[in-house]
Image (tube, rainbow, N blue to C red; front, side, top):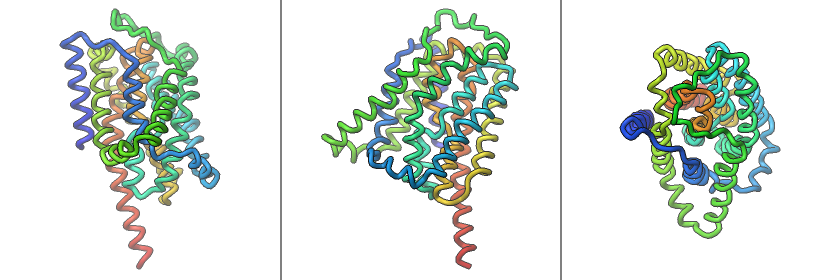
Length: 324
């Protein structure tokens, strides 16, 4: 609940600030902030030798790959096509391509999953950011003929002129944080310890700042141009997508520690990263492109808390039955 209130406050304050000031101009520095404060702390626990453990978990890793990048992307495309709105379709496709996220390791720990496997999958998914952005950068051109044309007249002077440049997010969100993490590990061990102790607070503060900033952008003021019908359609499409995601995760994983680790990487999306990438493409897809990602915050954070408690209760019940 605290995290949902945090996101609600960040979105509301961001939109209000944008409405009062006319909105901020977009700066790619927000990507660097996300990389340093969200990605870098996770990399402190990573060493190249950890990839040697991949061989011992190939079935789980293979399941993560084909479910996330084949099955769920297909489901997202089907729901997006049914919406008849290329902005909604593009957002769902982007969410499908970005499994896991900054909070996934917390849910993995809380549910008693295999933390080491969860971290390996987290790193592999991050490493796939470059091909993911390459694929997504082609989506509009390939999908546009199958959707009604997008009305971009409301953009006016709010256009950022940005597009998804695949190499940019990969360098800023992966390569630079990795280099910084190696430097800090080698020369600033006290900073590593401090970050480890306060990482939840750092993550929440960073998430709040990024969400506030992105919704205070001039492009985010386009949300006020969205009709109630479009709002309802985006909410329904996002709910259906997450229902399908959770159903797939429950059906295709088990309650073993490895199964739970895969479950959380299927059942959650990297929403903050999706929101950052969405800002690069709102000029192409229109205002509805932001809506599913905004709704995803509320659905995922609330749903993850429920699922974490359910997994804990299930494990306790199974343990009690086994000892009887």
